[in-house]
Length: 80
Image 1: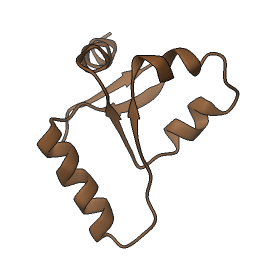
Image 2 (image 1 turned 180 degrees about the vertical axis):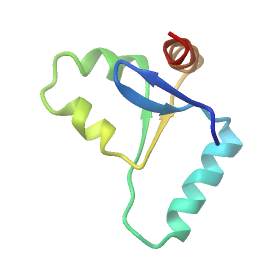
Image 3 (image 1 turned 135 degrees about the vertical axis):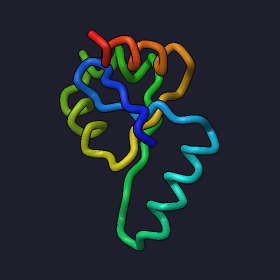
């Protein structure tokens, strides 16, 4: 689960569906409260206009990509 990207300052776990399910299972098994958000293009756009949205997203325990374009953008931004 080392495949991480960043998209507009948001750390992004670029995971397969199976890896995402495994990460969620680990969070549940930890027994502590946790938050998971799926970041899609709409949320990326909204982060510019909605006060506090970026902070709420960054505060989540797992931030996964909802859509291949978000994965590609996150990976591209990590190499820049």
